Length: 237
Image (cartoon, rainbow, N blue to C red; front, top):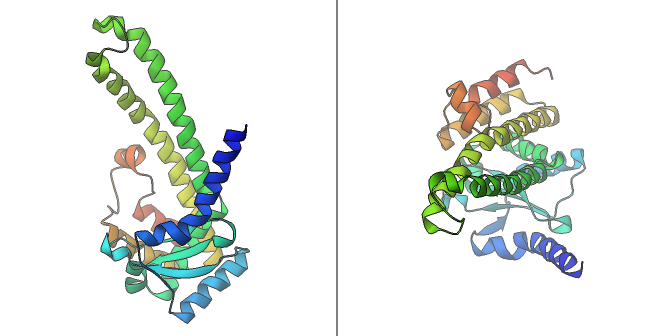
């Protein structure tokens, strides 16, 4: 019991220290200079009851052209970080919307839910694969599960399990994206910013606007751009 308590305290400590001590080792952070944008975001946080320590920009462009915003940390060390790619290419209204979308994920605890789903799926997969592997070794001429030559069979079963569960996980992921979109629309009441920010994000991330329906169902964690824009246009504000 003591070991579990220590692990919990360690995870909490890492969660609190990451935005302050760990992430700055990999990115250069600075306080957001744009006072108007800072006021927009803080007003949005106040409206939804989310308390943060500060708003920072970081040099995301050194690794990617993609744009993003996020919450980091826990408790009082919770910060808002905005990639420089987002600040350079998006209008204040669009940045506010992108951030509101991330707030939707945070408010609805989507990350926690996806971690739980992934954890359950992983342990269930290992259990099922272990049973299947142990009970079918003889069919392929193996005498025990420790034979190195049997490893390809184990990897085959793991791959098949992954192909089955990935679409299921993606169903949850797409559901959470719809919820975050709805949250952002309700919070900002800005349909135009939704559409224009989605267009820019798709262009920066080289996203396919209308993918094949089967491919989208099996492999996409986000709804297609065309569906999200249609959703925004038809959403009653």
